[in-house]
Length: 307
Image (tube, rainbow, N blue to C red):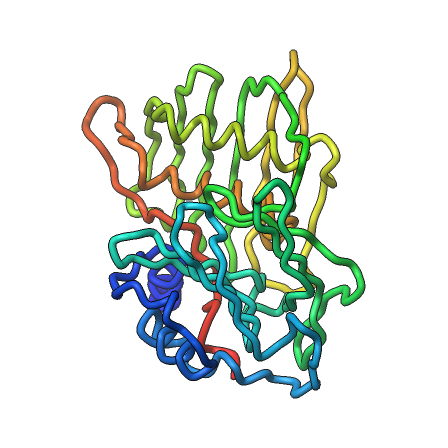
């Protein structure tokens, strides 16, 4: 299980130093070769498990080039065995963003359209049926790539005054990090590392300005007040995360999310909160910094295991 956790961290957090190749990709074979350089587990991306014919313009077996993050560099969207995006971060570095979700990517999606609103590229997706997939195949989501990952497109973000963020995680069948995190409006934060973090104990810090502002922007983007209070995947042995946000003079939104993939926007926020363990300078009662695992590991691999 420790090996699996390490694998997932590598898949989801690594930046990949490869020459700028996306502009030159012309065929599925070109894309496959490029993806194998980015990640060796993406060696059969155009193999669809359930063999359902898909002749739609944006369907399975296709790839698309566009500037998803609007940094002036061409990115890649691949709709194959997995639905994923690869962004070009510059200087020959690339990053994978999985759109399929959940254990063994059981929550499968397919691309139905690519649109632009106010020059912002958006991906329209819906659930995709499969041998082990369990998704609503009629409801569509429109996704935008934001700092931290994808989120449901929101043309009118909230302007909530965030007073406190509380976040805690449970264990799972494996080594899911168990911890508690609290962040105040003055950016002061407390981190209680309970189990499967690189250190144990209680730590404090002041969250850096840019990271804190990104957290607040994400909370305001994901339509927090209208989200459900509980989300749950339909498999066992996964991790539960509990998010409580106090805002606007004492209003409270509390979300319990078994599986930690309630919405794309929530998953984005969870990933940012998990990452704080490694990106901030935590101090243990003044005895120096602690480094922790920087990303949110899942208890099963995202790529390569499901054949």
